[in-house]
Length: 342
Image (tube, rainbow, N blue to C red; front, side, top):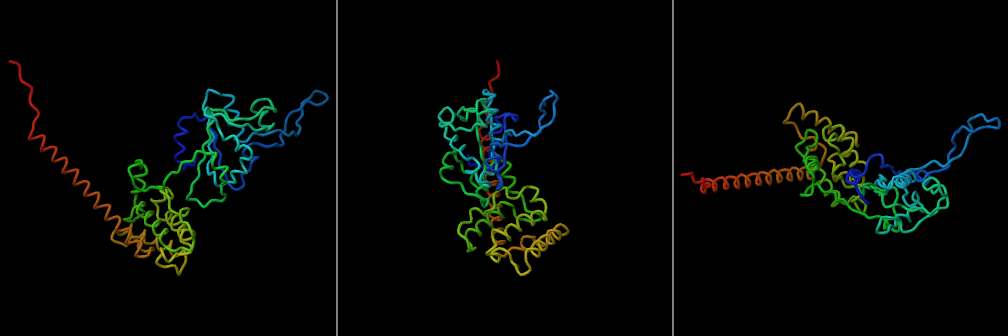
């Protein structure tokens, strides 16, 4: 599954916590970390005199893949779940190794082909010569964010063994849940501009401006790039969002977005924060965004906010008219009173 992190919750809700294992891929994560490896362990071993003494022994220590496979084989009546966060932040084909062959499954959910690994087989089946296959009660869900600049790419052979689902980066539409609608409508710190309007305007500018690189999809602002807490605090917003736009997304075209680039990022952040403080002290003060963004971009945001306000007013007016018409119709055609008994 190719998911954004929040979408995995529908899988988690169906599996008990004790049958769920979560792992995060990163650039230094390896096959041995994922599957397991021989590690030195101090164990009490009887000596020649029959007395127990601690000696250094090497034994196979289970990684998350082997542990979830062991759970699934032990509790066949329970659905088990392995969640891999940030699949594209590690070298996924190398981390999976020969295990990727197990991802080809039959209609009943079992692996179509088996692999041989004596260490895994002994821990899971108690038989080091047994072929390893994924059972039908084991689900593997992986998340990745296409708006991140990938550390590693995944080859086609690896990707086609997953059922992939793209989650669009939507700020509007009927498909949005209430939480997302409220998040998108949230205003930036001490500003009249909402997060949704800000992000959409910035993304549009990013896609149309000549910033010196090809695709901009991996640099776009996502719906949850900034959290609610980021949108409540001017300093957090500046350090996270404005810094990202300066250092990364508009690195090769800062003048397309920021109205004064001569003094560097520090000056931009300070100007924004000072304007936000002034706005708190005096509501008539200048919008902090207007202080740091080029007029073209800020004016477009204002225009979009005005259009949205007009649309909302129109919708409210139409609803009021419909309600009044319904009341009028009810008055003109009162329900017939039931006849009284003679």
